Image (tube, rainbow, N blue to C red; front, top):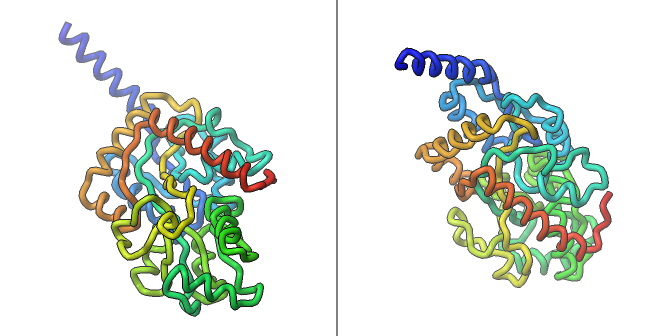
Length: 317
């Protein structure tokens, strides 16, 4: 019996070794140099030794993550391709595009969620405003070209936020979509655009360096890293309290054993002090979610945004 059990264990180990990909491509839907890219590289560095394989970050930038999501849909279902994304691609793009090229609940399998973050409104170095109130007072004195606010992707949470800000301030604010936060920040730092809305992880390094100023953030409480920055709710703008969230996804049909192994490994990696501290320094709040919890989270997030988008009068493109 002992020999039989030993033989069975060896066979199972052999099968698991065969099923293990030699390289895992961790796709990111935004350019290198942005906040999502930085987060992916922190995780990949520790997932590689934890899983015993190379984990390589692959940037498939464009269309707010749509290109990467479409690539995930047709990727091998063997655990060799994963997608690190926040809610915009998974839950909002399908609401604002007539044909996004993917259906999340059919085409993707959640692996695990790991952190929330806040979006915020920041101003360029040459914009003479230190507070939210000063910025909008300044806007009321400016010509039309100064009413532009950069956003990392069209039909995104940042763009809808700009539309709400415009209505509140009774200004013709113009959201200017970019292909990710990195090119938007280049224009902000060069004073080509006076302000931008993006995630705190996108802004954080430039904030620490004093190159841009953050005026307000989403959420129902201030960010630990930014105790002096008020929330939009504090400033009278309601409806943006639910923070966006990061997760990792695999193609639908990926074996459950692989999904569970990756999720368990990610949870262990997040407990490493160097990983936890680094992600928090990028502006994240660590909050692990299992695959079922992440699936439920995305369904609820999609439903709440469906109503907000309808109320805004936005027509899917």
